[in-house]
Structure formats: structure tokens, C-alpha cells
Amino acid sequence: MNGMFPIKINLFYFILLANTILADTALAKSAEPSPREDGYDFMQYLADKGLHDIDDERWNIYGQITYITNVKNGFSAPYSNFNNTGGSLSPLQEASYTTTATLFMGAKFWRGGELYFVPEMLSEKPLSGLKGLGSTIQNFELQKNGTEEPTYYMSRGFFKQSWGLGGEKQKVASDPMQLGTIEDSRRIVLRFGEFSILDFFDKNTYSGDLRKQFTNMAFLTYAAYDFAADARGYTWGAVAELIWDDWAVRFGHILSPKNPNQLALDIQPFKYFGQQIELEHHHWIADQPGAIRLLGYRNQENMAKFADAIAAYNANPVVNNAANCQSFNYGSNDNYAPDLCWARKLNVKMGIGLNIEQQLLDDIGLSLRGMYSDGQTEEYSYTSTDQSLSAGSIIGGRRWGRAHDAIGIGYAAGFLSQINIKYLAMGGVDSFIGDGKINYSPEQVLDSYYSFNIWNETWLTADYQHITNPAYNADRGPVDIFSFKAHMEF
Image (tube, rainbow, N blue to C red; front, side, top):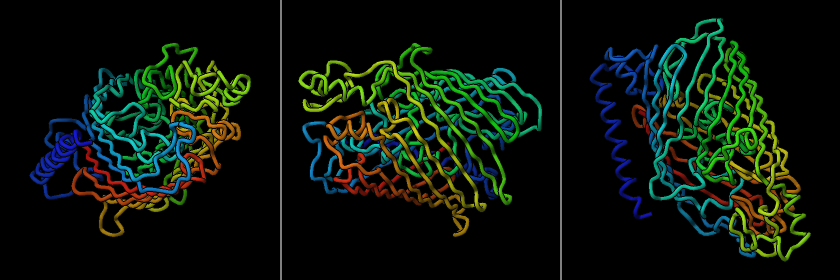
């Protein structure tokens, strides 16, 4: 923690310096507000100087820096890591942080042909080694393999090709991973390379851009969406999309990791993979925009079924227990418990989810997500959740004279299947949870925040989370988490 202090300070001063420069250039140009609704960025500055065509871009470059710190209170817990499972959230007071910096670069090579590269940096210190929370992990930036020492990596590198099919001409605004251009309202889009599947699936205006919205991971996507990805949340594959006016349908085929929540991907794209298909429709209700999305996923991976792990243990508990695992496992030392390591083989996991967003007034919007996954197999790439529900509302600050501020409140809950509960009750663990025993109850979070726009593209956010039944265990908690978030875009 002490070793990271200079990095945090340097990033903080970089944020102040960069925004001072942007503010000065904006003021030098004009005393009028920026043409961008949410601030003044570098690409717009170049366009205003006549140095860049932001409506028909050959290239663009954007970036972001985000620092999040969390403080967790102590809470009631009659037991933790019962029989040395190692899967519990510590009942003591703890502090956590993440720092990320991302550079988004795009270039056009021919009409419809674009290439994107996105290098990224992460430094983190999770609560309790990122153990003890199932569906409501308090900081969406956390990664399974992150360290306090900054790690630099290529998060995305993909090619995009679009083919127009007619319809109306639409202006597509310049943005990270999107060149400003004019597109047909009917088109086919193909992307292949390295990316996060969440770059293209399960978008939601009011619950998705968590660097400026909610902080809890339950609002990033469906908590039960076990999308294939490495430990950082990225993968390789292809996504095909058909956009037809207000409708869109997209399909993705992507690589899965060799072991659950680990970095190495399995390069056998037709043996181990993740697939998803999504249908989307945009609509208007009482002159207010909204959208509805239906997503289904199917993973074919080298993963264990809970029933098989239990059966292996019952057949020979002296040998087939957690402490005796010789293959990949989660480090439990409980020799009286089953473990998923004894049951991994080619299995299929499926789920279906509904995502709704609706603007109520110009500055008020709602989001709703719900997903049902089959609950028979272990989590492989995302959170320890078999079914999930989340709802939230965001109110813009125009009503109190702070147009770029926002206030939000959201509720989310995660649920487990009966066979998963039985596995945990016997002392089993997975990548995130396992107290050694369980008094099951859905894990829930209430997340509320205020986002304060300092100037241009910089926000400070105060966030409060109240989590009940951590790791789905009513014997433990509740947990209160206070967060501070500093975010800059450029």
C-alpha cells in the first residue's frame, strides 16, 4: 500500500494538469459552453481549430484515468473460513483501491474498415484477496490477478468492418472505440480480435458506464452472465451484428480461459468457447427514448458440475476432498469438503437475460436487468451467481443547477441454485466464495452515489453501498462500504 502512494499522487496531479490544459484551451477559444454536452475534449478542440474532421474521422484518440478507494466497516461474523476454506470476507475493517488508465486509439483504413488498439494499466488492492462476495463485488474495476504493482497490458486490439444496406443516413458521434462518421441505419458490422464482450453486448445508458455511475459490479452487467473472458475480463473472438433501423441482432463466438478466472485462454475455439446472441429494440414511449434487449449465452468449457463434485467426494471422501486437490483449485485446506477440482470435464452452461432502459424525463432514467442461468456448473469467468436482478435510477443535475452532476440509487440481488447451496453447505468453495458452511439467503446490495463534475471531463463521486448476506450467508454481515471515485476523460 505504501509503495503505491507516489503513483496515486502522480496520477492525481496528472488529472489536475490535464484538465487545467483542457480548461485553458476551451476558455481561449470561446466563453461559450462546449459543443459537447458532457464537457470539452481533445478531439473536439482539434476540430474547432480546423485540424480534425470529427464528423468523418480518419483517426481518433481518447483516454481515461480512474481512481477508486473503498473502506469496509467491521461486521458481525460468528465464523469465517470454517475448516480453513479461505473463501470468506474478513469481518475486520479493511481498505481497498484500484487505479486504471486507458488509452483508446482508432484509425480508418478504407470505407467501413477500422482498427482499434486500447492499452491499459491497472493497480489494485482488493478486500480480503477478492474473496467473500458473490454477486455484489464492491468495485467493478477489480481483477482476479491484479497487484499493487502497476500492470500494463493490451486490453483490446480488434478490426471492424461495416457494410451499409441502405435506410436513413445517421450521424455516429466520435467516442472511444468509435470513429465519428455517417452510417446507414441498416448495416452489417463485423468485429474480430481482442476485446471485452461487454463492449458490444448488454449495453445500458443508466447502468453500464460505472466509471461515472454506480460502483458495485452488480450494475456493470447481469451478475449471472458468466461471459467467457480471461482474469482481466477480455478475450479473443468475433462478433457479427445486423442493425436494421430500430432493431439489432448480434452474435458472438469467443475464447474461454483454460482455468476459471485465470489469464491464459484456451486456444481451441471450437471445443471450448462462449457464445451469445442478443436481440435489441429501441423505442419511444410518451416522447421518451428507451430500449429492450434479450440476451442468451451458452458456454462450452472444461468446468465442473456441483453434483459431480459432491458425488466424487461421497464416493471417496478420504481422497476426493478439497485439501487433496492435485489439479487447479481455489486453495481450500478443508479435508472434509468436496471440491470442483475432482469433477472438471467438458460441460455446457446456459443463461438468458432481459435488459430494459427507459428515459422518464430529459434528466431521469431507469434501468432493469434480470438473468437466469442454469446453476448446475461452477462460475468460470465472472461472479458467483446463478440468477441475478438489478434496478436503478439516475437523475441528472439540471434541476439543481449542476447540469453535469448526477445522483443515482440502485438495488441488486443475486441468487444460488439448490445444488450450489448444497455444495457450499458441505464446505465447498469456488473462485470467490466459501465460508465453510452457509445459512442461505440472497446476497443483496443498495448502492447510492453523487457524481460531482469539477470541470470539463473530471468527476468526483461519493458512493455508499449496504450489502446484506455476503456470500449468500445470513450468518454474516451486513457490510457497509464507503467509496470515493475520481475519474477523468480526455
